[in-house]
Structures are given as C-alpha cells and as structure tokens.
Length: 332
Ligand code: NAD
Ligand code: DAU
Image 1 (cartoon, rainbow, N blue to C red):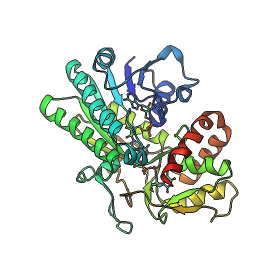
Image 2: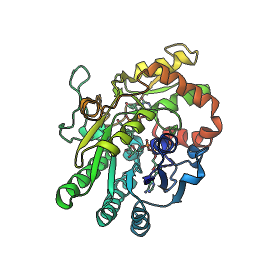
Image 3: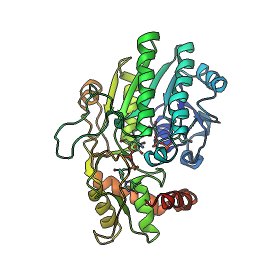
Image 4: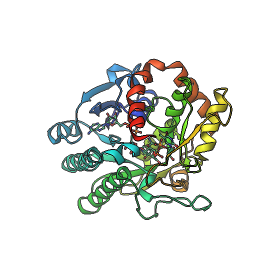
C-alpha cells in the first residue's frame, strides 16, 4: 500500500482526488493544506480516517514539507491560489503559494527522489479565438494572461526545468474548467446556482460569449490517477472532456434546471484581460493511457451539481456573504 501526499486536499479538486484514492484504490493519503478561505475540512467528511491523515500547514514551509515528503511514496500537488478575479485584486499570495510553494515542494521531492505529479491548468496557454476550431495540445506555447495563470505557468516551468536539470521524477497535467460538488461559491457555476437559490439574478461578465471547456471534477481525478500510474516521466498530459460551452449557455442551463426564465440574468462589467476561449485536445491522454471520462454528459452533470448545492446549504452558506461582499466591492 502506497502513501500519497496530496497538497491542497481540502480544496475543490484536491478533496475530490482524495475521495477517489480512498474509494477506488488501497492508497493511504496524507493531506497538507493551509485551510485558506478556499479550504474546507467538511469536503473530506465521511472518508476512512484509518487511511487519511490531515496536516494543516503551508507548502512554503520547507521544514514541514521535507518531513512529509520523506514519508511519502508519491506527491500530487493541487495546493494553489486558484481564482482569477482574486489574482487581479491582489497577486502577491499567488506568487507566494503557486511559485514559491511549488519550488519548496520540488526541492524536497528532489532530495528524496520521490515520484511527483504537478497539477496545472489550460490557462497557461492563454486563449483561443471564439470561432477558431483549434484546440490546445501539449505543444502549445505558454502565453498566460492573468496573474493567476502567469504564476501557474511559472510553476510548470520550474517543474520542467527540474526534470531536465535534476532528473525530477515528475509528470504534469493541464486541465480545463472543473465543475461539481464542493466547488467554492466564488467560481462561476456555484456562484450562479447559489445566487438563484438566494433569489438573486446570475451575473455574467461582458456579453457572456466567452467559452470554457467543462469537465466533471471526478473525471479530472481519474485522469490524474491514470497519469500517476502510467504516465511517462517528464511528460505533460492535457486533461479535457470535450465540454465547450459559452458562459451564456451555462447560465441558461442553470436557469432552466432551476425553473427560471432563460433571460433572468444580468450582464455586468467584464473581467479585465478576460480570456475568450479555452479548448483541450485530450488525444494523448486517451490514446496513450486509455483514459475516458465517466461523466461526459454536461447537462446531466450540471443537474446533479444544482441538486448538490440545493441539498448541501450548510457546506456553502458560511462562504456566501463574504464572497458576494468581495464581488460587490468590485461591482462584479
Ligand atoms: P481551490 O481554491 O478550491 O483549493 C485550493 C486548496 O489549496 C485549498 O484547500 C487551500 O486551502 C489550499 N492552499 C492554498 N494555499 C496553500 C498553501 N500555501 N499551502 C497549503 N495549502 C494551500 O482550488 P481548486 O479549484 O481545487 O484547484 C486545485 C488545483 O487545480 C490548482 O492547482 C489549480 O490551479 C488547478 N486547476 C483548477 C481547475 C479548476 O477548474 N478549478 C482547472 C485546472 C487546474
Ligand atoms: O481553465 C481552468 C481554470 O478554470 C482554472 O485554472 C481556475 O483555477 C478556475 O478558477 C477556472 O478559471 P476561470 O476564470 O475560467 O473560472 P471562473 O469560474 O472564475 O469563470 C468561468 C467563466 O465565467 C469565465 O469566463 C468568467 C465567467 N464569470 C465568472 C464569474 C465568477 C462570469 O461571467 N460571472 C461570474 O460571476
């Protein structure tokens, strides 16, 4: 039985991956998480305590990170500041956690010769034109637009250099937009669902034409596990599930599921530097590792997600007021 260190395991996707490991493999898991505003221990409720250890701490804490990496057979690094809008307000925590945190972790991984998987985003490749049939591949040039995506790009490049210079036993994945249970209410889909539950109209940036490539978080988790087991060292794998939708399509989908008129939303000021379109070509992951999504039906996944937020108000309610107060201060 392996012990896997999962950083950011109390966040949205990290907790989903911990659930995947405990429910579908025989691995033991140590979670390292700082419990920032985005971390929530309740996202790990119900998991087998005999195989799960939680450590509250910072990925920038070199002593703690070294101790935990020394005890692990593999490390999967999810911890990050993850929200573009926040990075436009205050980029500093993004530089600290995403760049210095990754540096701290890969130095420990290098010392101990540990297998490492680096979680990243399609945003490192910048954006695509709306009407362009092109999609991102592993060979796309790096061209990040926001402070968030620039720090994720920086962290990816550190990992690539550590592979080349020091033989780090690393793989990297760049995934598209995730949705599903336990996503913080600052993000687009849960923000609009919980707004409607509160009797507030959804707020769509600009004209709502921007396109995101949606994937269920559970499919992200199964892809990461496939890469950890079968991925080639030094390689990058793009993760996506052919889920391109405009923001207007998504918001109309939410309104339909929730019994509201399809035009019951407001267009608000656009996000500065707002990327137009992301789209992933997942051919390498599918052909090389035989991965396929278990939740390819976005409409069904969105319905399940709406139901989850309806049924789990105690999970999201404590975050809602402060999140909307931050958006209110930006007039978004
Ligand atoms: P999230 O904001 O929901 O969770 C981040 C977690 O990291 C939280 O639990 C937080 O407490 C923890 N954390 C933050 N700073 C830390 C630090 N200094 N030390 C230790 N823990 C810290 O984020 P998410 O949406 O689950 O994203 C997880 C990872 O996946 C990130 O690396 C993100 O870049 C990447 N990613 C996200 C998406 C998406 O659609 N959300 C898509 C592709 C890739
Ligand atoms: O592509 C992967 C990335 O997806 C991840 O790396 C990021 O961590 C994750 O946050 C996400 O980034 P986005 O900026 O695409 O996600 P967000 O949920 O913030 O916004 C999705 C789209 O919806 C985007 O075009 C902006 C728009 N939006 C967002 C909010 C919060 C709105 O129109 N209204 C809103 O209120």
